[in-house]
Every structure is written in structure tokens, then in C-alpha cells.
Image (cartoon, rainbow, N blue to C red):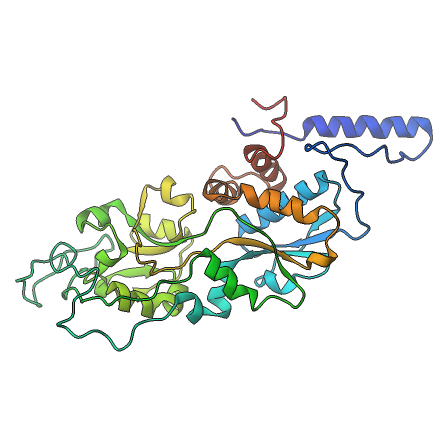
Length: 370
């Protein structure tokens, strides 16, 4: 399916014709009979107070708010997109629906709980644990002296000056259900998640194929013994996950940097960073042929996208309409939201929302699309 150049052209012509007819009749157009929705039921009349949809500051979250507005309006429920917020969950309430990324919320309000317990004290040198790599993963032979020069990383830094560390067993970080449970405690009184995305937003360590091929990296624990001169991004990840990476993956990066103008994926491609923490649904991973490292022990957490509101104040049918969109938010469609709002072929929000709805199967393909 090709993205439309002007998908609203037909709708604009119809609207103009209706207005002209009303003016010729010398009266104000009156509401017609209720039309059945796609499911065959009659849409509920619009509420006097529209639902305000409050998203975060990321472009894909703001696009999702436009998608939700479009679908609610199609179901006869008045809605409008509110001002984005750095803490959208705080705006949830009566007649206000917040679009909440549980990972972002939990990392800000309860980072220690999100990351999970880190084993202390550290294991003794004689102990053995999963993820201990002493040769291929370290970038140097077991007999190499500590002062031997280390191979250079794509950023020009040597990446192995020490040996791998025996790794302990640790408690996994929060899964999607756990992240939801964490944030629930911090939601405004009287509110709850009224819809939840089908797909998860798993946090992953991502590198270029050059780096993963050079050091035979497959799992996050393969970084054990390689991180002492590596550059990681973004810097915010250090505060939440730095201790966990060090204890459970043997990885203490030499430096954490803030994302540059091209974002964390661009930093990897340009060599500004060696490893980046990214959502597995980020389309830049496939677009830039990047390699996510497996994380069998779930050292890094995962989450979901929630729609949070006061369920008692929602108009009839609003919760079902919100969940209908959330049900389409699997990994592929979460990635499509980001591609449409931030990628090189991004569209303006109204066009992008229309295209996403058609791609998700929530609206039919217009006749003038090809």
C-alpha cells in the first residue's frame, strides 16, 4: 500500500458541497440520524465535554494521541488532543486520558524497583556464574598480559583491558506486567489503566554489526570484560541501569553520553557511541541494520503503553474504543507509529494518523489510495 499524498481531498470536497447546500437552503445544517459504526451498532451521541488526550513529549506518543482522537470521533465520542506533557500520567482524570509509557514513567518515579534487586555482595573470584566469558567475549586470549594493547572499537577506543568477571544469578528486571504494577501505585487517585498495548516495549542493548561481529557478541552478558573502554548512550541509562549492568553483565562502561543530534541510532552509525540502550520496537534498528543483543536473563526491563483515565467518567463506549486501538499496538504497529512520526518519510500528524489507522485495519482503504 502506497502512502497517500492527499488522503483528505475527497472528504474536503464533500464537506464543501454540504456547506453550499446548507447556504442555499438558507438554514443551518441540522444533525442527521445516527449512523451505524463499522461493528454494526449505533454510535453513542458525542459528550458535551470532549475527552482530552494527553501524550508525552516523544513524537510517536503525540501521534498516538491523534490516532486515538480520530478513532474516538469515528465512534461518536468527542475528543481532542491536549498539550503534551513530560509527565502525562499526572494529567489523567475525569475527561482526560493520558498516554503512558510505563518504562519512562517507572524509570522516573521508581527506578530501583523497575531495575530490580542487584545481588550484593559481589561473588568471590572462585565462584562461577552464567555469562562468564574468558576468551572470545573478552577480545583477548586468556594468557594475554593486562598491559597488552587492546583492539580498537569503532569509536577508536580500546575495548578490552581486563578479563571477564564471574557473574552471579540475579533477579530479573520488571517484565511488562511488573512495570504496569509499579506505575499503578503512582497514578492519580481514581484513575487506572483503561487500555493496554498488545505489544511490549522491551529495552535492549544495541550495537552495529561491525562491533558484534568483531567480538562475537550475541547476548548482553557477552559484553563481560569488554566495557571498560566502551561508550554507551543515553546517559540517563547509567542512573537506572548502570549498577545492574555492572553486576549482572560484567559491564561498566567507560563513559555514558547524551544522544547527539542524530539520536542514539545515529550515534552508533557515526561511531560516537559503541552501544545504545533502545526500545526493541525502534524502527531505526532494522533501518540501520543494527544488532540488538539477546537478554535471556532480562537484565533490562520491558513495559507497555497504557491509556490511563477515570473509568467512571468516561463516556459510554470510550473504553472499548481506546482498547480497540491498543489491541492493534503490537510490536510492528508500535514501530510504525515511530516511523511515521520521526522517520525520513514521516507525514504530518493528521495524514500519519489516517495512514496508521488504515494499516492497522481500523479504517477501510480509501478508493483514491493505490
